[in-house]
Image: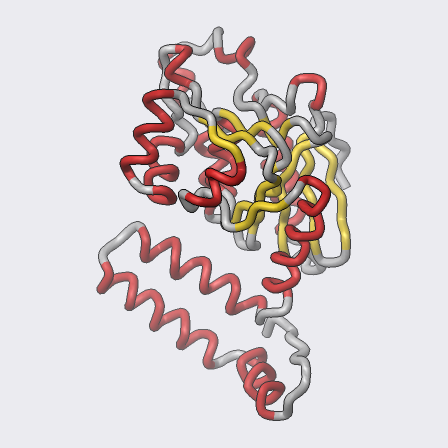
Length: 260
């Protein structure tokens, strides 16, 4: 296992937690932290014992408070196109083979909010704070914020949050559909693991192809999306897991999937 300076990788059963470990800086996301996230994802990708990856921040105050402003101040126009940037890393998270959950415990601002948006599911504590304040710095949210937020909560709400820099708490985030669950801070871990357990109980190949079909279909027209859906189903119909899942249902027992 690789040694990480800015992350903790914690395993719990078939869950792997990627914990941003810079609490003294509200878990700000500098370039080095982003590269460690890529390394951690690559490490976990080859680990068949891991079924779901959870992103969170160290401590109770912050999930991730966005980009490291001291590094941001030095950026030039051409830096946007250099490899390993935040947008590229978040694209990797969005298209990751394994399901991802953002467990949002405190501030999720700027790049932190965009990190949560790149995950498949977001679970928040009631005291979470979401916001995209980049316009205060005369820049825009450019790690997917202008695109993913609008797709998740709608164009109007996205424009309101981005143009005003408005910060919202977990309850409001739940009402507008930014998060799927909101709970008291002391219940956050249990709720996140409850959501993860529901995913882990499903056929792992079906989970992977369902995610692929949704993401691909969302970026294209419906007819193409339906074709992707049909092809994904054809693949699953040929698997041992499909036979096991249907047999277990008919025999009223718990299935034992083998990812085959």
